[in-house]
Amino acid sequence: MSKGIRTKEVEQLFEAITTLETTEECFTFFGDVCTVNEILSIAQRFQVAKMLSEGHTYTDVAEATGASTATISRVNRSLVYGNDGYELVLNRLKDKN
Image (cartoon, rainbow, N blue to C red; front, side, top):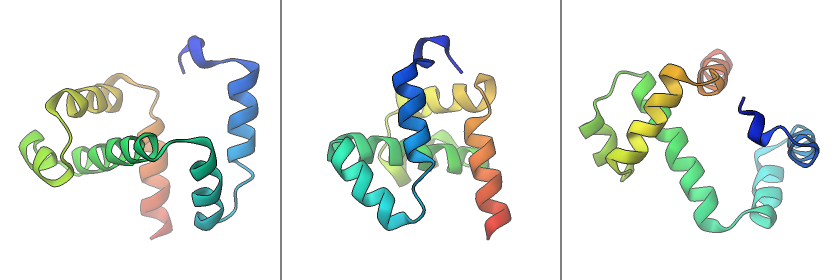
């Protein structure tokens, strides 16, 4: 994880997020903390990561999600060179289903 976000405040935020127990609680909390556009942007990036990890092409991802090629490229860079956060969550979701 980037040292730039490793602050006491961000740690407290992440600790707060880990207390959420249901999807409905997530809607409630994130609806208060984030703007609609912020939530939609994060959700779009997650869908991009999911599709890329499934082997979809940039073109397929762009058409399905509406994401720009710049966004798709940034997400792909995170998948390849990042902290494996997407992989962690995507694998847990696969195991859950």
